[in-house]
Amino acid sequence: MITTETRKKIIISADDFGISKLANANIFRLIKTGKLDRIEIMVSENLNADEIEELKNSHIKLDIHLHLVNYNSDYWRGNRRLKEGVLKRIFLFFWKYATRKTSPEKVELQWAIQIEKFKEIFGRTPDGISAHEYIHYFPPYLKTVIHLSEKYEIPFIRFGRKNFDCENSIAKVLNWLRKKGLLQIEKTNLNTSDFLVSFDWFDKLDFISNLPPETQTEIVFHPEREEELKFLEEL
Image 1: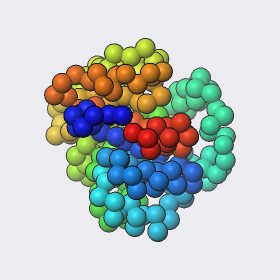
Image 2: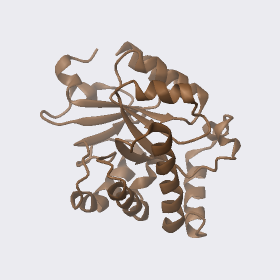
Image 3: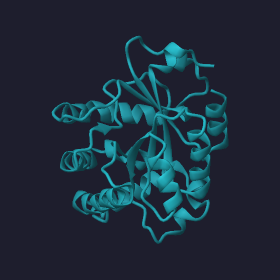
Image 4: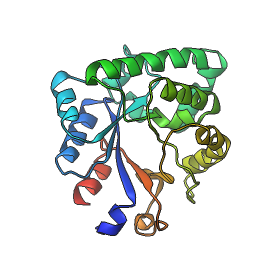
């Protein structure tokens, strides 16, 4: 269990609302527990009017979770993405960037459309901004996200001001990218947490009870995964 004092230090963020019907259903289970602080919403065909209305009435911060997935792809309807390995996803990411299929100009247009769609369905701008699989840390895309956040007056970005000491390989890459991008963030009015971590970066969760004093840490959960859903329900 997490103490009341520790709970004040953490922001619990549920990732990937809209990526699948299972993710949506599990996040709604968590909304009823009152344990979520932020929900990352992917604008996709997995959103319906009833769910949108329930999200609006939840009084939880609703962030946009930008992505590069084609709406017409079966990515949204099957388990293909869960079977794709990390190395394959990384290769495809850089191959598409190198071949200009995902140039910053094209990505900015696609992400602006997603933000406009978010505004249309929720009747307001998002409370925060991030991108699927942390690709907004990639320097060319970070510049794009900052520009969009300023254009649409989005106040919060998932980033973190300080590096969190962690052995996870993804965390190490993000720490390296954070050092390169933090100066860009500091030049804006964007708010962010002191630290950013993901639940699946750790074998043990001792880090939660050992967070530095007077700091705030955003902890990313993926409720589509049964073990993460269970942990939050028992928190």
